[in-house]
Image 1 (cartoon, rainbow, N blue to C red):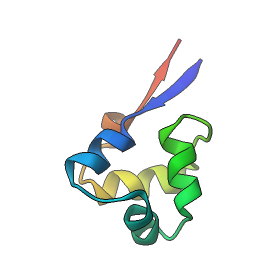
Image 2 (image 1 turned 30 degrees about the vertical axis):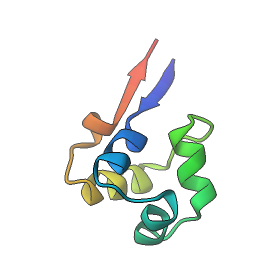
Image 3 (image 1 turned 135 degrees about the vertical axis):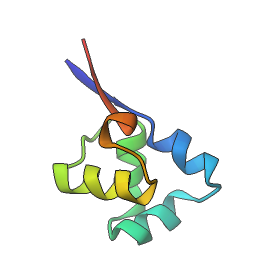
Image 4 (image 1 turned 120 degrees about the horizontal axis):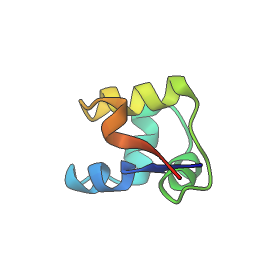
Length: 66
C-alpha cells in the first residue's frame, strides 16, 4: 500500500511556495518537498496541520492506494 497526496496541487492552487507553506507549518522546505514527491509520509499531527491550513479534510489530501 502507498499513500498518495495532493499537497502540491492545493499549494499551487493557493499560489504559495514550498518555503511559505513550510513556514506556516513550522517545518523545513525540504519536508514539504519530500511530502509532495512521496518520499516522506507526514505524521498524523502534520497531516492534520496541512489539512487545517488548506481547510480540507485529511482524506481530501491523503489517500491510501494499493
